[in-house]
Image 1 (cartoon, one colour):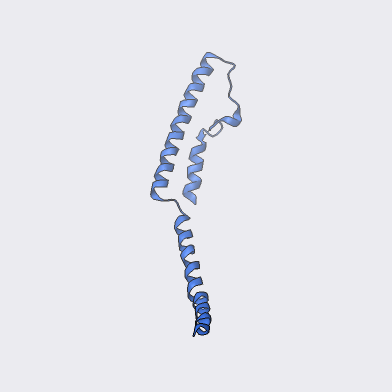
Image 2 (cartoon, rainbow, N blue to C red):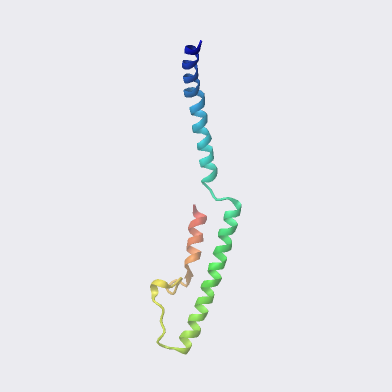
Amino acid sequence: MVHELIPLTAILSIFVGLPWLIFHYVTQWKKSGSLSIEDEKLLDELHDLARRLDDRLATIERIVAADNPHFRRPETERLIDDREDDHVFDRIAERRRQR
């Protein structure tokens, strides 16, 4: 009797248990593959905060540049591209919308 249960258990685990386990984790993976509503709201809030901080920093740079004509921030650290008059954050948000 015990010898008959071993092959039955093996067959059930291979044809029922294993696919169930695989499908379970595939659905879990698909659920976690995207951002939740709360994560998207947090990301939008952080985007707005970064934009405001960038605007404030640009204002401070203009004030310091008015007081000191030799002041110049390195181009590699700028978030505002002077050539296009465009925020880096706008380009990042645009890429996110395209995905």
